[in-house]
Every structure is written in structure tokens, then in C-alpha cells.
Image 1 (cartoon, rainbow, N blue to C red):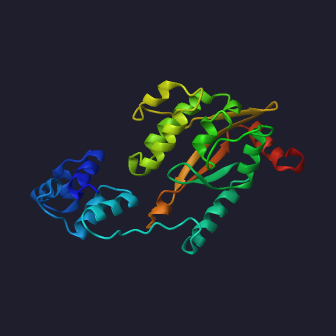
Image 2 (cartoon, rainbow, N blue to C red):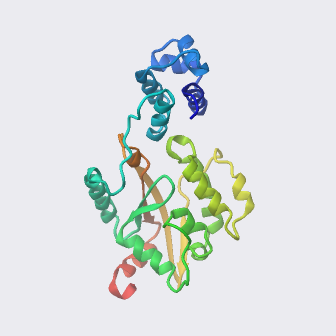
Image 3 (spheres, rainbow, N blue to C red):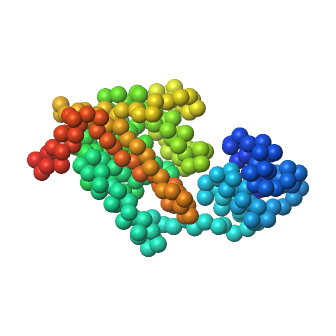
Length: 268
């Protein structure tokens, strides 16, 4: 395991803070901070947590910092079905229910889908109706969008959406850093047949539109959506911090009507 000093220096670089700025924010001396980063001084548990808080380090990586400094982890990582998360799961279900008849889902840090509302299950089943195969592996947002057996053929503006998703995967990573799991799934989908090679070198820092529409078409029916992504505020559990809630909103009256039609028994 890497030493804590270089890890702290790495996160300071990610946040683009000088030693002086970090020392001032954390109320420590520049000299002591320099000694910690170079390994000449061992930080206390409290200092590691304070520096991690100032640097806005994700909870998973805060645990790594503590382990690297010789301390036990601070933040639990609960299983999705753990009894301690019952209230959270119910709250998420309520959020997704209120999004009906429009799609909504909950995904984790690797873009795996943890939960969906009825509208999302109904809509994506409609898009993939009659397809002999589905994307490999666990249900995953990136796999669904990039794999030839996903919904790629039903997205009429797929090149625009694909580029936006790659940017988002790199920009919206927890803590602003693309972690190993997210990098693995991104590498996987970029290797799928028909995915343009230029997506591997997309500049994640370039300005992007605040809303990228996703335009679907199947059996003569069009659905124009945009989506919003929400995270849970001030979580103290690694699993909860890494959850994201994505809600799809119709961009026009036609999409609203089509979504309501799908919700009817005759629309299934």
C-alpha cells in the first residue's frame, strides 16, 4: 500500500491547492505539511481526517489514507441490502416512484443499475423488444448505451450522447477522480464494436452544454428526454456516497404523451 504522504500530495494536486493554501485551510504549519508529504513526519489520525476533509477526498479514499497512515478505516461500506440501509432504500424508492411515468434509476460508482422505477423498466423493455440478446454482465448504464445489443440503435443522436457520457464519466466521478471500477467499465464500453476511437481522447475539461438531449425512436414513436443526476448529501457511508439518482424528464408534449401511453396496459 502506498504511503500516506504521496497520497495526500496527489489529492492536493487534484484539488490544485498549494501547500500554503492547504496548510491555511487545515490550520497546520506549511513546514509540518511538507514533512508529512515527504514522509519525514507521521500525521495523526485526526490530521489525516482533517486534511481529507479540506481536500474533499471521497470516503472510500479517506479510508485508504487512514490505512496508509497505519490507522483503521473511519467510514463503513454497507452492502446494498444491509438492514442499516432500509430507510435509505425506501427513500430512494419514493423518489423513483414520484418520477412516474418517466424513467428514473439508481446507479453506483461503476454505473451498475441498483434500482429502477416501473417507467424505466417499461421504457427500456419497449426499446429492446424483440432483440435476441442483451448487453453482457450486470445491468449497467454505459453497457446499455454503448453495446450493440443495448439501445444504441434506438438513440437517433447516439454520437452526441456517447461523447457526452464519456465526458460525464470522467467529470462526475466521485471526488472528481475516475476510480478503478469506473475506469474499467469505461475501457470496456469503448472497446465495443462500432464505438469511434476518438472517444478515448475526449477532453473531459472542455466546456459542455448543461443539458444534452437523448432522442429515442422505436416503431415510429419518438421520446426526447434530458436527465438530471442527484447524489445523497453528507453521507457517512461509502456505499451511499457513491450512489447517483438519474431522473429523465420529457423535453416536449409528444414525449409526455408517449410515456403515458406506455404506462397504459395497451402500451406495453
